[in-house]
Amino acid sequence: MKRPEDWLVSPWRRGVVAALAGALPVFAFPAPSWWWFAYVALVPWILLVRSAPTGRRAAYDGWLGGLGFMLAVHHWLLPSLHVFTVVIAALLGVLWAPWGWLVRRFLAGVPSPGRVGAGLLVLPSGWLMVELVRSWQGLGGPWGLLGSSQWQVAPALRLASVGGVWLLSFLVVAVNVAVAVLVSVRESRMPAVAGLVATAAATSAAWVWSPRPEVDGRVRIAVVQPGVVDGIGSGDKRFAREEALTRTLAGRHLDLVVWGESSVGFDLADRPDLANRLAALSRLTGADIMVNVDARRSDRPGIYKSSVLVGPQGPTGARYDKMRLVPFGEYIPARSLLGWATSVGKAAGEDRRKGTEQVVMNVGHGLRVGPMVCFETAFPDMSRHLAQDGAEVLLAQSSTSTFQQSWAPEQHASLAALRAAETGRPMVHATLTGVSAVYGPSGERIGYWLGTDASTTMVYDVPLARGVTPYVRFGDWPVHGALLVLAALCATEGTRAFRLRRSAPEPHAPRARTAHGSPARPGR
Image (cartoon, rainbow, N blue to C red; front, side, top):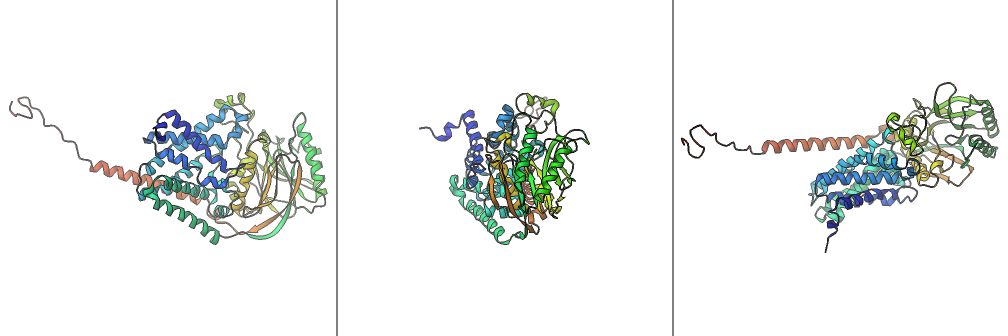
C-alpha cells in the first residue's frame, strides 16, 4: 500500500498541493472571516515543506505556496487583470522561496528542542520579511497581511496598539509553527508547547498592561454612500444622487459629512456650479463636507485623486492629493514594458499623478482629521504619521465598485479596524458603493456596516480619544526585531560554516614521482 508521501513524489502533484496549501489562509479574511482559522491555516503548508527531500525542493514548495497565497487573496482582480493576476502572483510568490528553505532547515526530520525553539523565532521573522518586502507600494502594497485577519478579535486589536499588524503576523505564524510541530514531531513537543504558552502570555500582558485610549468627547460624522451609478453621464448622475442623500441630513447636528472616493468627477475650479451646490449643502447641514475629486486639475497637468474640504463659503483650500497609487489600477509600472496589460484587462489607460505629503485638516467645528484614499488604508505607516501629526479622526475615502461581487469590499472595510487600534484614533471608512464602516479608537465597530446593496446615509457618534499608543510612539519595532533575528541567524550560519571548513582534515598529497623511481620503490 502506498503511503501519502509516495503520492507526493511527483513534482507536479507536490506543486499543486503546495499552491492549494498556500491558498488556505484566504478563508481567515473577510468575507468568510474565519479569524480562528488563521492560527492553523499554515500548518498543511509547513508540514509539506518540512518533508521536502532537498533544500531546493523546499524552496520550490515555498514559491508555489506563495503563488497560491497571493492568487487567493487577490482573486478579485481576475476580472480586471485576467492572466496578468497569475503572472503577478507567480512573481511575488518567489518571496516565499527562502522561507520554504528555512522551514526545512529548522523543522525537517526530528528536530532537536533547540532547533524548534530557534524556528519559533526565525520562521515568523522570515514571514515578516516577506510581508515587509511585498508591502512596498510598487509591488502592490500590504494587502492580505496575515495579522489583518484578526481585525475583529479584541485581544488582537490590543496587541496591534503595541506592535501594529506586524506583531499580529509574527504571533500568528509562531502559533502555526508550534501547532505543526505538535502534530508531526512527538519528540519536540515541549518547545512547541512553550511557544504557545509564550504567545498566550504576551497577549495577556498586552491586554492588562498596554495603555487604553482615553475617550474624550464625541463627534457626529455622516457617511454618504450613493451606490452603483453607471452609464453615460454617470459623473453628473452620481453627484445628483449624493446631493439628494446629503439633503436628508439637515438638522442632524453634524460635525462632518464624508463622501466616498471619486465622488466628484470634475475639478471644482472648472465647475463653480458644483462648488456652489456643495457650499449650499454645507450650509444646509451645518457641517463641512469632505468630497473626493477624481479629475484632471486646472492648475497643473495630470489627473489627481484628491480629498477636498468644502465649507459654507465653498472649498476651504484644504486638499490632500493621493500619494500611493494602485499599480495597474491607477498607473502602470514601467509602462514602456508592461503597457500591454491595458489590452488584456482594465489597467489604467493614463497614469494618475500622486501627491507629495500627507495633510491634517481642520474642519469647521475645530476637529482635526487625517484623510487617506482607497488602499492607502492598508499601509500602517500612513495612519501612524497622521496620528503623530495631530489627527483626531482618520478618514478613508474608497470605491470598490469594480469588485462588488467579490470579497474585496468587506476585506477593505476591515482594514480600518486595524488602523484605528494601532493609532488609538477612530476611523471612518466611507465608500461609493460599500462597504462603509466606522471604528472606535480601540478598533471596535461603531454602528452598522453599509453593505454593497445600500444607497443611503448613516450618522455615527464617533468617540474621540487622547493619548499615544506604543505603536505610534515606537513604530515598526517587530520588523526591526525580525531583522535582528535573521541577522543573528546569518552570523551563526556563517560562523558554523567557517568552523567546519577549518576543522575539515586537509587531503593528503601523493608522494612525488621522480625521474628514476616510483613512490612505492625508490630508485626504480
